[in-house]
Image (tube, rainbow, N blue to C red; front, side, top):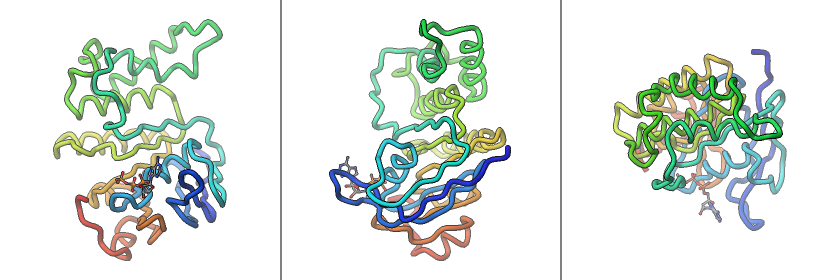
Length: 229
Ligand SMILES: Nc1ncnc2c1ncn2[C@@H]1O[C@H](COP(=O)(O)OP(=O)(O)OP(=O)(O)O)[C@@H](O)[C@H]1O
């Protein structure tokens, strides 16, 4: 995959004109996993929302060369637990941007949905309702929905929060599978061990970038955050 890195220059972003993220200049390597690490309120979600284009920068720029489609998986606490839809329908929602003028899924759309179910290892759960799944299964369904969008930038806000060690490990393994296919992954996390499994790390504190680089030296440079905030 021949794509350039994403570049943030002097980026400030926030809410109602107030910056929650100030003057961040950083590089996000294409086709790699970048972890955004920091305590509660440090600005991780704000950074992801700015990368997704949901929040317009108050100042500065974001260069996203070669990124055509972005998938943003919000914190699962933000997704209603009682949505009365099946796992397959949830994943099929990821195809909406690809549907033709009649909004009818074509054979290729159905094939992508089945492939994403299989890749996230939830094909056997396809007919189950989303609200009957465990947290880890649900998170994999949301990941499958994001993959179905065939995005080249995948943004995940704390995808493993609330999951047990095995489910967390599974999600982290799946992210490695996603980048192997050339997707750029950025995920917010509180977990140092998860940040260490990526290629790159941005460490935020109070809306500022404290350190950036390979995960090991970034975590060593920063004032070591608690492993669970
Ligand atoms: N919708 C909003 N309106 C106003 N202020 C907000 C909004 N969302 C976040 N903030 C504020 O912006 C700052 C950064 O919040 P953000 O959610 O980006 O941090 P975070 O690192 O993702 O935190 P957490 O780990 O708790 O999810 C905080 O002070 C927060 O109160």
